[in-house]
Length: 464
Ligand SMILES: Nc1ncnc2c1ncn2[C@@H]1O[C@H](COP(=O)(O)OP(=O)(O)OP(=O)(O)O)[C@@H](O)[C@H]1O
Image (cartoon, rainbow, N blue to C red; front, top):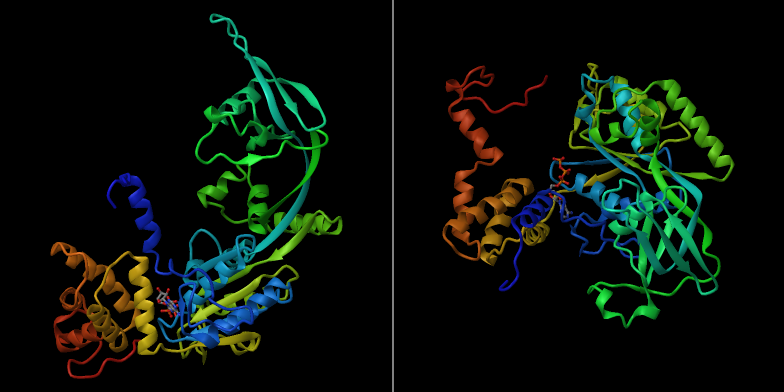
């Protein structure tokens, strides 16, 4: 756009955000009666599965379904992860949503069951209510005494605050002066000071000062001068996860470990103590539990020990809703020689509500490609989209989606504004899909090392 400048840093950030494969998904796209809209919130087709996920959401929101588990089962690229993302978006910020791939539990740093316990606790929120005292009023005047230029004495000062009914002068310490200056507070602002932490928040400018043009930016918000007493009690509510409480209490460095992600193993005594404390808070009405969702992708990668852990953990009072997904058919249960549907033991399978995802029609593929082009800011001609859809039906949705960026980059070299059919075919010839790649492997089988398929034979799945 002419006249608009974007700094390089800002451009970079938007690009990175949009690269995520599921960044176009903003919810499940359901109406009030839980019917799936054809195209909505970035979601296309897969109506039955979306509706089923919507029913589960309603049960979660009504707090009726803690400790249950749902299996999303379907072929690769049929939107299992997309539906889980849609659920997470629809649940809103307050409901914890933890996502992991089953293979993540095979880490050397902690045992498999510890990794699962942490994942479970990341998906359970505790809503804590706290009463804090605040001082809320309109600033009448701020007076800061500058110490003599040579002196090292700390600054002192006074702030006069008023409500519609009273006015009081407060002494200011060094820290308060710094926060007031940082927030650029001036006469006419309405502020709130948290008495415990000393934190100052600017609520807006008083309506009475709306004619003071000097002190206003374009985004100035006007508020009424507060009524009543200057000192008030306010209830604040935070939601933290049980995992966060565990980490903060388990190490001397406390919450810093949360940012580093290096939380290590947490002792079971710490967890027991925390569960006890949370139970006390619940009884006293200071806290409630917010059961969230734990999504485990590629669940067939878990082994028999993990499955038995899951079975037990789901019985716990403080269990989240567990949503697992797999694209496997009847296959070996990891860690055993037994086969089972989806590679999941029958006793666990029996507890799961199973939602199936089905392959997309050509029309649906086209719509998903449209959405992705828009998401990636790629202009593409109708012909090119048609070709891409055809490629998608013959290969896979994922492969077609990968070609969007590749053909865009190719079109840029031609210095044109729109990706055309020739860019898509160029990308198709440069990058192989799975079928062509395995065809090539079969033809040249004897030239590869450790080849297990006879040069003339058909490709066979390799069982571990
Ligand atoms: N119904 C849909 N609407 C919009 N986008 C979709 C839909 N289904 C899938 N997608 C998109 O297609 C891509 C592949 O889908 P996804 O990763 O959800 O498949 P999956 O079933 O989890 O596959 P796998 O079994 O290989 O893990 C993703 O980028 C996803 O966001």
